[in-house]
Amino acid sequence: MSIKVKPMGVYQTNCYIITVDGKDFIIDPGVGAAAWIARNVINPVAILNTHGHFDHVWSNTEVQEKYNIPLYTPKGDVMLLTSSDWMPDLPPSYPDVIVEPDEEFDFDGVKIKFRHFPGHCPGCSTIEIGDAMFSGDFIFERSIGRTDFPYSNPSDMKDSLSRFKEITYDKTIYPGHGSTTTIKQEQQYADHWIGTL
Image 1 (cartoon, rainbow, N blue to C red):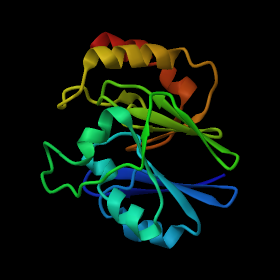
Image 2: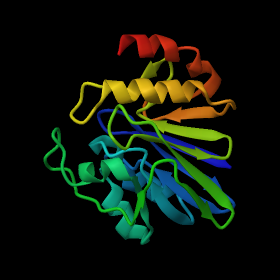
Image 3: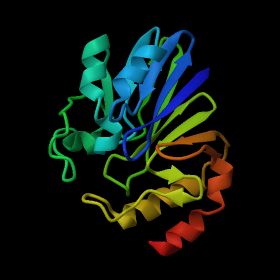
């Protein structure tokens, strides 16, 4: 498995291209992501959204149409793809697959697991591929997603962090912003963040 990353737009939102067995999976194509994606994919097969905030989904439709590939979006955030309180000019996008909480997919032997961790937004999810967890805006290095946005829910974030704490394995975390970390590293801080909510 190879992983390419490029921070996109003013908010430096990480767009990822994960290549497994010759298949390219695009995670969170944000503002201006299409040109970088075009230079770095050979066989794109799907677009995967960790959640629906504008800086993670801005280029969904452009990439979807260019490569004629399906868009997978967590169920709770589908509404955010066509309306943004911050960015009224958000290009609308429409998922081909609405992902149920904790749903898993098999792309000809490549298994991809969505884990639902609401709080930052209703559909907020991580995406696990192999030994990697793409955490969107749920978990960052020594930080968590904000819960003061429209549709955020601090109580849901507490529950999500409690469940995150109980994961028994370790994987590298590739967040929506900033540097990589690990599950075990961030589990150390879960109680602290729960106490702040």
